[in-house]
Amino acid sequence: MSKKDLTKEQEQLARFAKAMGHPVRIAILQLLASQTCCYHGDMSEILPVAKSTLSQHLNELKDAGLIQGTITPPTVKYCIHRGNWETAQRLFSACFKDIQFDSGCES
Image (tube, rainbow, N blue to C red; front, side, top):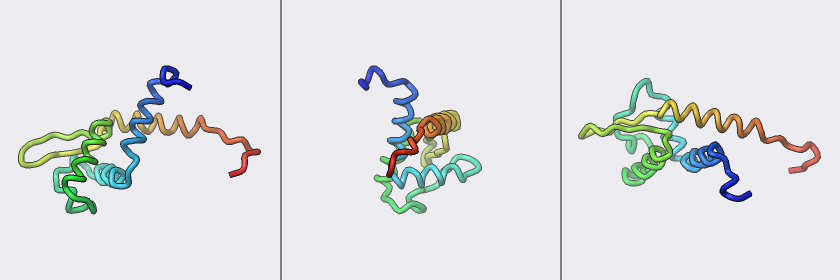
């Protein structure tokens, strides 16, 4: 399959999967999902990473569209991007549903 054969949905799903492909990013998403509103504290006090590393992970999630943030000095507020999160859920669900295993295949 060549790149021109990939659908927009496949490329978007791969982008979401890449952004979620690190345990710290999963922890960030879980932290943000547990909030009733945008998180505006220092996540480096909660997560076991340096501020610079945390910033890189936040940027990766933001670039993928999974989170959104606003800067109001001296704080930055982050939250789940609900529209894109719903898109990610739909794409992952469809992907897993579409994958069928042949019962004759041994793992």
